Image (cartoon, rainbow over all chains, first blue to last red):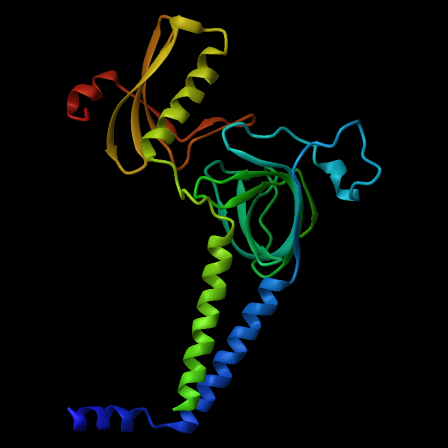
Length: 149
Length: 116
């Protein structure tokens, strides 16, 4: 038993190798941390009272610029997501694109306006629209307006 | 061995960060049961086909569940009866393309062993 443990100990005794892997793991962690921290997600939970809200953010005017889908649970009146595109999917309709965006330590699905092509992976996307619950359980912004990307 | 511990700790922190972000905003109940989703979709389909003022003359019933994500439903829109296969993963109603994720099937499919 002691010999087997000793053999494992000997096999793992590679200080130079582990130093390199530690540096690589540190780099990976830093990249993930910086990638997740950039961008932001801002949410307006309820429709502001009155026609216009002078104290509201400038992007709020796009919140009512479309028809909210009723076949999804609505989580908030409006949201602005700013982040990096991680992945994109097309369908089920031919003009529909969804992208996964990471920013502000949030992963958000953005349904792009019909007919708008999906931005490339790694590009920055800023979109505004109502916040709903996607079928897979993730939060989804039904983008009425894409401000960047 | 100290560097091995540092490597494992950093990899663990990376995994925890990714998992935390992924799970952070997810619905805690994950997904509703497939039957509930299919029922919801069938209701919406009936509403789309028959309109909101149909009342007692309209109805729907789930007939069976032949495969994952697919549910067979019987829809009665006044005097018109039809059977459909609803793909709950793709179902949606759009203004531009109408209903998506729904395929019409013959109503005898129920008799073909799809009954639950």
